[in-house]
Image (tube, rainbow, N blue to C red; front, top):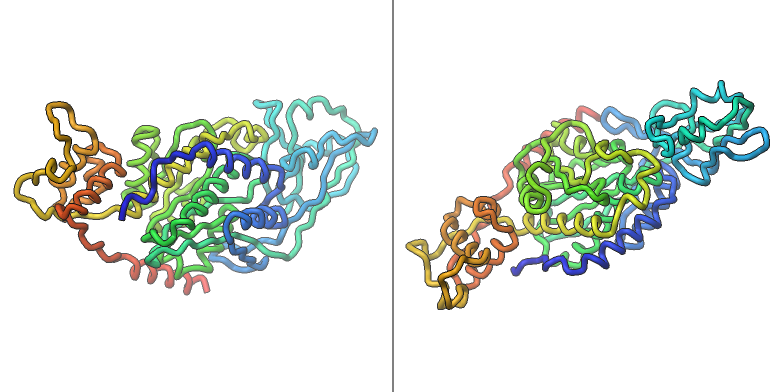
Amino acid sequence: MRIMYPPFDDRTSAGESMYALVAELFPICRSITGDGLRQTLRRLQQNVPLELVEVPSGTQVFDWTVPREWNIRDAWIANARGERVVDFRRSSLHVVNYSVPVRARMRLSELRPFLHTLPEQPDWIPYRTSYYRESWGFCLTQRTLDALPDEEYDVCIDSSLAPGHLTYGEYLVPGRTDEEVLISCHCCHPSLANDNLSGIAVAMELARRLSERADELQYSYRFLFIPGTIGSITWLARNGDAAARIKHGLVLSCVGDAGALTYKRSRRGNALIDRAAEHVLRRSAGPDRIRAFVPYGYDERQYCSPGFNLAVGCLTRTPNGEYAEYHTSADDLSLVSADSLAASLAACERIVEILEHEARYVNLQPHCEPQLGKRGLYRPTGGTALPDYEMALLWVLNFSDGEHSLLEIADRADIEFSTMLRAAQDLDAHELVRRAPLQPRRDTARRASMINVAQSHHA
C-alpha cells in the first residue's frame, strides 16, 4: 500500500470549512443535556451519519447518575424601567448553566450573591455551571455590575430541569480489523469557540476524510461527540466490549487558537499513540509541548482510569486553563482561525498515518548495502549531502532486522515518518525488504476481563 495521506495541499479550503462550522454552532446554548446539545449533534449529522444515543435520566453509570435534562428558553435581569441589563438572548453565557427556574423581584444587594464576574477582566463574561447541585445565577461583566444602582430588579430564568435524556453522538468508520482508534471530543459548552467547537470541527472533518478512505484503513475509527465527563463515563459504562477493542485514542480540544500544538500523554506514557503524537509535534511545535499524564483535564482521564487504562492522549493547542480567554466570553470567533484548525487537522492526519503504517521490516539482503542506483532509488551523481529520502533508504535497510519499528527508525534518524514510510514501501516494491507480520495484540483479553470485573461490580 502506498502512503495513504498525500501532502496537506487543501489547507485553505479545509480550514475555512471548519471555521464556518464553528461560526454556525457558536450561538447555540449547549449543556450536558438538552435541546441545544441535540441541535448541535443533528447539525453534525449533515456531515456524517452520526448515530444519536439517548440515555434516560436516573440511569446509573458506575458511581454517577445521568442527571435530569435541562433546557432554557429565556433569562434576564431588568431594571425598574423594564430595561434588560443582563440578557440571555445576547449571550448564552449570561446564565449559570443548569440554573433552576427563577422568577423574583429583589434589590441589587439581595441579587449580588447570585452574580458572577471577572474583576481582573472587567469586559468579559465568565462561564459558570451548576450541573450537580440545584442552584441558579447570572454571569456578567464587572463593568456592567459596577454601573448598576442599588434598586429593585426583575429576575427571570425561564428554564426547566426534568426527567429526560443525556444525548451523545457516535460514528464508526469500519476498517479491515475490529481494533479501534477512538477520537473523542466534548460538545457541551455554550458559545465557546476554542473550547470546544474547535475540537468538534476538527473531529468532524477527520471523520469525513477517513470515511472516504474506509477501504484503505487497517483500524476502525470510532468518533464520539459527548457531553464532558458524564458523557464519557456513560459511554464507558454502556460499551465495555467496544472499549476493550480500543487500541489507540485521542481527545481533541482547544485546537483552534494560535498557540503551538500540545500533546498530553496517555496514562501508559509510552503507548504508540504517545510516540506517534510526539514524533509529529517534535517537528511542528518542539519537545517542550509534550506533557505527562495527569488525572485532570478532559475525558482522557476517564478513558485512562485504571479499570480501563486505554491508550488515549489529549491533543490541544494552548491547554485548558492556560490561555486568558478560557471559559470566558473572550473565547469567541476571533480566538480561533481557519489556519490553526487546518494545521490541527493535518497533525491528526499525520498521527493517523503513523498508527496505520507502523510496522517492522526485515532486510532480504542484509549482507552489505544492495546497489540502489541500478534500481532507480539513488541519484546517478554523488558527492553531495544526501536528501532525507535517500538517507531514509539507508536507515530502513540497516535497521530492518525485525526488531526496530519504522517509527523507532524515524525517531532515531530524525527523519519524518512519511519519508521513512515511502522509503520502506519503495524498498519493499523492489523486494529488498519485507514487512514483518503484525504482532498479535496481547492485552485485549486481559483488559476486557478487567472491564467486565468493573462492570459486574457496578451492576
